[in-house]
Image 1 (cartoon, rainbow, N blue to C red):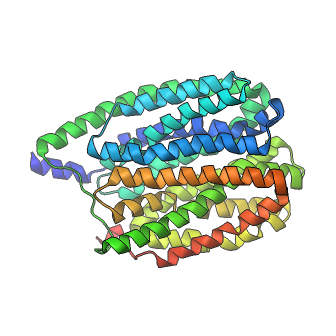
Image 2: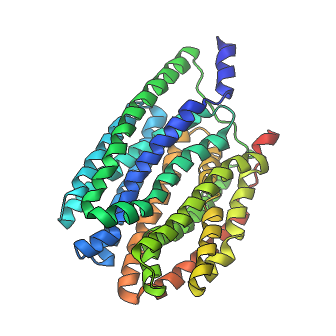
Length: 402
């Protein structure tokens, strides 16, 4: 029995990996409806950039504060059925959002979405870890690709659904959500069975870290550096995904639809980057991939506000691919820094990314209202300079060499 258990621990369970990635896609598509609605809410309800920033802030801050808590609780006591329950909460949020004209009701609706998301991410990350076997980087990548693909759908939803049907168009997403709730109920059954097997075998899955033994102080410093990287990256990508469309319309005089398609291009290449990042980090090491995603896109980020539209399009592809290549890698790196707390670290890193995106949206909204769109874009283009702290991260051994 024991022999078989250890064997199955190393074998990746691909159907579950893919299923949880699809669920992640649906979860993040629902999240993505919010920024997709910004141009619509601005024109239909006449909201200011600051009010729009506040919607994003409430959604992400709530999800952000709750995620590490959910991660911590699920490290102590995993809750398989929390997954479908979380998605039901998001379903309620979208349903309210599609049919309200009141600003405060919109804020309440996004709380339901935030709650759903906060439950999904740490638990989903744990399912992905359980299904990963020896392929940690790959599993986290497949899982994140689901999420980032969902987010990348936002501009398309905006251009092809909301632009045509207005705010009510958001209700279309509920069809996918219903499928997601059923899918997560199935995954929850598998997850519960895994937990029972672990209990019988009295063997908890532990994580083999690719990092050298570090003191508490070194781990603390490394986490601080990691969070600085997540801060700058989230702030920067929030700017592109939520506000850059206004810059494109204002500065280059493009239509909303074309603007959204350009944002989609940025995000779609981000998905490509995320996918290759994980398996690449299994080969060449986590730190090297993080460095790659910092150094190469830097000049393009700095130059983006000053180039003509066709160049900006190419730059968006390069920045999207490279800045997101380290997205799943930072989660795995954090988990390897503190290998005993998988859920907590997944909750903290994703939660922090959400939180920084939230604060970013708020700050950018206020800046745009007071200083104008052009000024804001120039300021934000300097943020990636902060990413250079990655050079000071502890070096890890590539998983392939372990």
